[in-house]
Length: 559
Image (tube, rainbow, N blue to C red; front, side, top):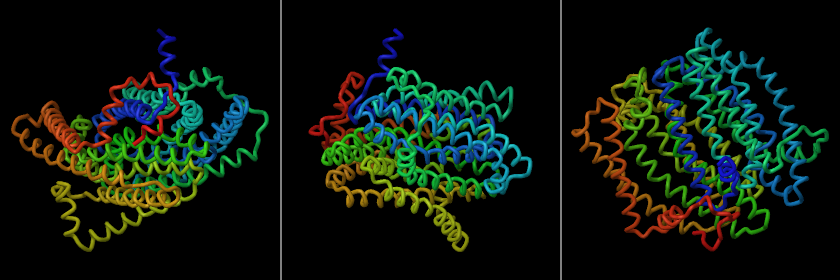
């Protein structure tokens, strides 16, 4: 039985749809655990200053993790590793050992420096916190410095795992990460307070790393310290990874900025932003990350093999699937936002005001889920083609627009109170006095919409490919999704008189039935339109994807 399980976990998986489906199911499981984690946090603390401190403390270790990615980005590591492996396993393993060694040494230096720098960063990160709150944040951030170390190692390990298309074991990593945090909330928190939750974060990151070790051993790729370092080669990897790191660092700086500004607002603002941000990342992870991660190794193989036609077919196939799935999810998240937030977070100390603000922020975030997913895909496609500068330039430039948009929207609301009143009215938060936190999700979504449009047309210009099939499919799914949203909204109002909405079961059933009927309308509308993507997905689901042994789908079968 154990051998059978290990055989399944270490099985090579090919084909875009099947690899993406596996990663999507894994992401769904991880997201469910993540939502359970957030429910525990919300019910124990509510959207207040305690969670503000907890989420703010995360930003500093995240910054360290981003800095460490300057050494090796997976999107750079995988093509280089595949190239080395084509020369022989020894060359690939030597390269892996050198990257592993350099990472360990650089982490020790970076961690030591950041340990002493944290108190200096605290006033910049949370100017609205009291001295005691800043002290607590510094203590938590220092403890969490172990987390980016384990996650950094896990990132390097996953580069090897993905190169061999061992997606089963890779898919389990985020699951065990959330399990570690849940252990911290349920077991460590009663013993050590807020620091106990941080211990859970460290445990989760350790599990994220260690679960990939058996697969590395089965591949004879378990890393060891290398006495000799080819610094010329490492320098090449770092230079190629640097643009990607700049892009990620920019995102962290933006979140740093949002956290800093939110700390000056009413207590709980940082928590509201993070809760809603986490909820919108559920479809983003399940759809955008799954397809982009599943596609990347094959895209790299096609480009290294000078098969540009297959490369473009594979990229646009993944783009169509992202649009196909993310459009209806976006509409459902907007229509069912209050039910989603109340069911997932509405317990204990999480108040009705917290619910309304989080739901409003979620609706605005959801507007850009499809855009964020497409940015993930086209950025990875650029990297698979060895073109790293342009996508990062686009991402960095548009990310900085968040600051511009946030300032501009705030200014408009100040000079034109009617604009703010209208914004609050459409989000149904007119009865809440302070809704300034809702400016940041709007700025965030505007940025990502611009980013997606820019990177799509840049990719089309630089690498080619047609867009007629994308447009046709887009209009099909848009029409079906809007009809679905109308039906779901109608059902919400109808079921409002059927269920007791003061209970968990009543709210859940209202949202579940409304969403289910809406999805049925979406499905049969696409069937009526004879949508090609729906036919492909239905066919793929009928197959046992874990038996597939191909490295990639036959390009003739790609849409």
